[in-house]
Image 1 (cartoon, chains in turn yellow, blue):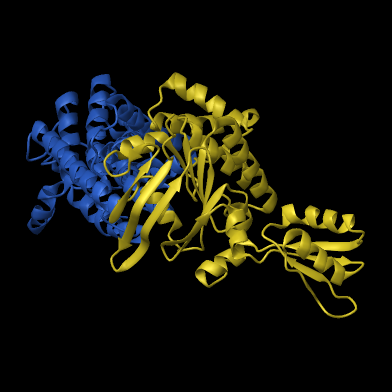
Image 2 (cartoon, helix red, strand yellow; image 1 turned 135 degrees about the vertical axis):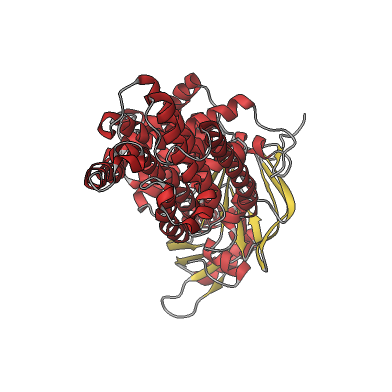
Length: 314
Length: 272
């Protein structure tokens, strides 16, 4: 059985503008069907990388394969297989939703019949089919972004690039947009490559790469990146902290340490709070110890970013 | 960017069609803006044409002054919309909107041709409205003449759109392009023979007229009127070159500009 080729594979992808090195030797592999986040502050090289992967600009060194086509030798094939949503919407506000989408479909080489069919399908996918005849100017910012996604999906791409898709949206609109993206991934099996500087958005992706000053600083699943910091802790208040510490050490090999003082707590370093919290409570309960309170604290992606880059992203 | 396999010709044509359609939809969606653009040539036709007709003797322009002015007014009606395509190209590039077009699976040359063709059709459509007012310009209402003028005006629009686009792809800032237009539009229009016969202009302006595409456009329109309406030629308004030569000059100007623009567009965008 052959393994499905990666949706994106880059090898030493680099881009410089004169003396300025915008992207430096990026090596990435994005698997088919995953939601991959490119996390970094403004000016980190996210948009430049997307531009190269979408064949809009040529790398100064290295190369990449996107949706099975080489960005240097098969740029048209790459563009035919990907959908792209940039930071700035190119919708014509005076035209209706359907008209905008049909124009886009024709631009992508679809026949009139295909354009009509795909427009109806894309509008249904993003939940805007009931507003197909409305002018785009009547849509809110969040709905326009959803329409942008529909535009990017018109020609049936297997890979969707989203460059800062939620910039300028309020939190409910952001949440709504992400709900639609997850639905797309589940129902259509589309690979999503998204650049963002919002930590909460990166958190919900399957994997992420941290980019800073044009270089990949770290790449893995969000939970693994956080776990690698090893600073997740569970703070417990029990009926007998000394006995509880000894119990947890004997039962699980953990090394809890008790904070001194009358209101002291027992701090237990763990790899993953979600799985350890119920286990610790169950162990202590089995030994007849009462757990009065339990607070789980995990490293955040901001901690991860700080760890790898020496500065906070937000 | 180089490519081992290009997109299918049918897909390329569809992309061009979409870009032309987009321009026409923009046009019909903004009737107020179109009306504003049409206002200036109409004002020229009725105020300048009416006002100066008593001052300019008929023999100086080979007929009534309003008839002489009509081709120039037609030219004015397409000049702004045709050159606006270049202006919008810079703005779209600056704002990132152009990338939405460039991500289509078509050659950049094709996309630029589509953008130019869209601008050309849009400008010609605006010119067509003025052509319909031919009797107001003292011209007979003959279908063949109107069609001939429309064809010639479309060619002029093509040359101007391609020129504007070729310049725009080399300019980074929209302000620079606007400044360039404001500096060159009036002198080029004036020396084209649109308002007064070129024989009435100082001789030292001749070299400028020789490299002025609007002069060839103006001559071509005058020549079309003379050929299809039997309208008397102006003193030199019908041009120093035959109609076919003026038409060829316009076509060549447009094609060379389009070629240079496309080459530069491909190179500039790839290195962005």
